[in-house]
Amino acid sequence: LGTIYAYLFYASIGKRIIFILISLVLPVFANGLRAFGIVMIGHNTGMEHAVGTDHLLYGWLFFGVMIFTLFYVGSFWRDEEISLSPGIDSEARPGSANNIKNSDSSLLLTILLTYTLLVSTLLFSSVIVSGTQEASSETEIAMPIRFSEWLYEEEYISDWKPAYINPDGDYSMTYRRGPDRVQLDVAYYYAQRKGSEAISSSNKLTNPYSGKWKLVKAVTHEHGSRDVIESELIKGDEKLLVWSWYQVGRYQTSNIYLAKLLEVYNLIVEGRSDASVISISTNHDGSAGKAINRLGDFMDDATAQIESSIEAAL
Image (cartoon, rainbow, N blue to C red; front, side, top):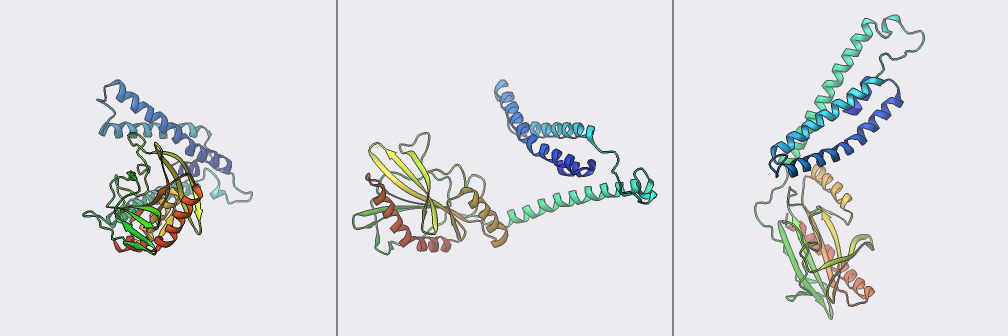
């Protein structure tokens, strides 16, 4: 809206840029004020107001007031006339009938184009949402019992489990290669939807409020051509080293922002909305190098089959 307003009411590029920048920054601060106001209304009325439907109503009212104020203040610096080059036809000069007619036509065209853009966006988004995959029941993931020299065993390496929210499929198994043991955890989301998303701040390696395991370190680690988040977990004298990453369709990344972009790409281009959170963990016996090598060996041997098993769940 700020961009449209700047285009219609300012002639100079400088004014337009300044107004657009204000239109970008002001809503951020205004939204903070809106949130604070709604919280205070709820607090001072015993949560009788500013919750539920009226929460949205207050938000839209605040939005309307903010937009009106922005446009009203901006009107004080509007350009009444646009300077034209010397020698231009008198019929096209500012204030002439033709110029006013052209200005009205441009305004009408801009409004129509804006409306068309908004409606098209809504229709496009509704088509995407309606075409999104829906999980009708819990999805089974059939993981191999063997990855090269790594064999499945029933006993877990610890009582730790990732705190992933409402996955469509949840897989956890331990694999052994001689004295080395690695636990594989996969949270599979067949369809991304509210309250059930792979790329979400709600998905954590540990429960920060009531969990016994505590996250003490998390860094990005590169292993060959892949990148993972390397985390260290502690519970008393026990330590775990965990590598985690996202599998978004056919693509792998540990960057949550890139994962979201890949999600959008998959939805629009490839017509799929599946994603997974994958983690492998091992005991950290005090030697970080040994634990890293153990996870690296398992990742090299198992990743291709893990991805194939996830693809087979579609």
